[in-house]
Image (cartoon, rainbow, N blue to C red):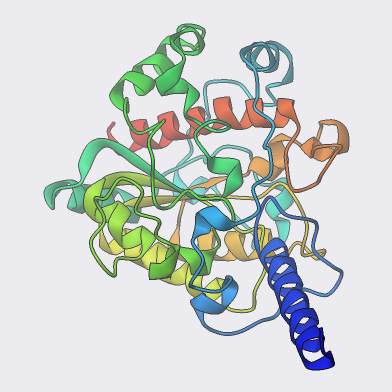
Length: 329
């Protein structure tokens, strides 16, 4: 082998190594971020790897699956708040984004603006009993709400009100969605190349969020992304919120459990936008702070502990129940 050939092979191997490192740094379900926040580019495409690869080619990592026993134990012992959520008027609630850590776990009110958005969406064809999730690895059906479509025993153990809500939204819990993929970021939801279109119902050149709101027609949507930090995330998230509102879909913002960006700017930004758009917030961060390691897995801080996943399952359903009933008094 001559020197030129050897040099080319070494360069190729090094390029592949750099690509793999970039993928791992950019995705949820990947090694923890370095101390310096990731800064790449101002375009959604630059939040991701080479567009010639598909999302399914990301390095796959096993996510802990919460067991039914863990869910039952959480219901009995670890629920930080009661099933019945206090309802307040907007005038009774003061939300300071700087104090987001002290915000309650569950939303306390639905604004008149969101009621108007919701009604407009129903009039324009959104489905009353359809909700969507915009999320990363923590929102995959097998570790989040899919259990309510797939496990009748889990549903039978719920309070009657929650059983009713499960019945209302059957089919939305355990479904494929182009907006729930490992590694999803704000920019990914606005990027055509991130749309795997596994079930073939997306149209050419549709972004994941465009396909989801056109096909599934959700009246409510969880926004559960944010582990990855990039300088344009606020602009992307603002665009996502406005797309949902324009579609007549009520967004629910969800705080994230980790602090991989090291200064908690992601949750602070969520709080700022929640106040600006008068959106309901599920403060998931607050619901697991009493757990060992603040609810994060001992093996890797990109995952939750089994108990934290179980809390997400039941609390997510409670949030859906609250928002749905407040929108349909």
